[in-house]
Image (cartoon, rainbow, N blue to C red):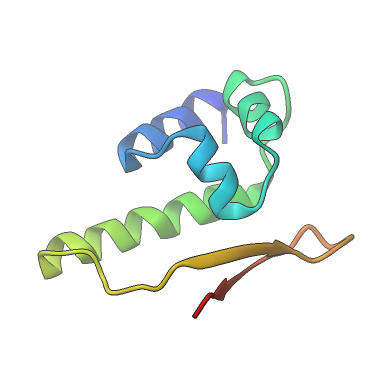
Length: 88
C-alpha cells in the first residue's frame, strides 16, 4: 500500500489519522509517517482498512451503524499483532 492509497482509504472512511492511530493502537507519529510516505506501511494496515470499508458497506445496507460497543486496542509485545477487546 502506498502513502497515497493509505490517505485515500482514510478519507473514504471519514477517518482522521489520529482516530485511526487510536483505533489500531499505533503511535500517531507512525501513522503520520505512513501518510507522508516516510515509513513503510505494514500489510496489516491494508487489511484493517479493508475490514473498515466492509463494515461501512454493511452499515449502509442496514441503514444505520451496527450496535458495536466501544473497543480498546492492545498490542501484543513483540508480535506486531493488534487485538480489539470489548469494553463493558
